[in-house]
Image (cartoon, rainbow, N blue to C red; front, side):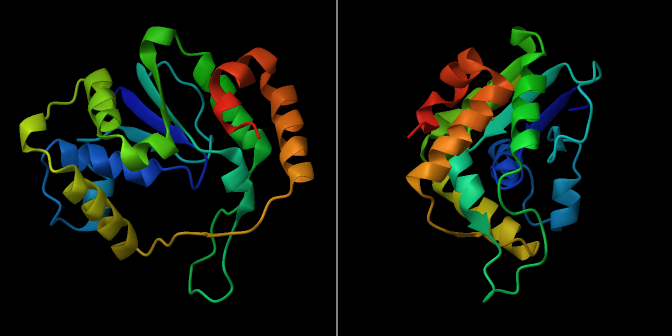
Length: 195
């Protein structure tokens, strides 16, 4: 998978998709997490938009999550969660989308985090786009989701807590993001999140 990459804003489902693709392809989940995460059997990843858009990646998958939810995430003080990225980094979120759009349309694929939670076909569609082999008849999607969560948790990752978001904040977020990506891009890719 040297020519493929998955990009996402932190807390947007990168682990869910990468690990899900690994499991979908029937690979060994009893291996240590670091070995699975570093496997060449799944696409590379860019979790913060730090990697440049490179011609080395002929296929790019972008995972988007509702920006309201990202804004509302925080490290709950009652957990032993390690320090990490919490909250919405608006410039990074918008840069990921804008950079992904610079890739030729035949070489890019968009996934919404919310669809990963309930739509089994998303994993199959991404696998098909990437040219990854899998046997749909043998796939247990309940196991895929359970095993993905187990691996995520065993690696020390924890879900973030959420706080309430006001209508005023939601409107400000929509305006800022629209300004950074443009109205057409917002309407095409992010309108599902507009409140």
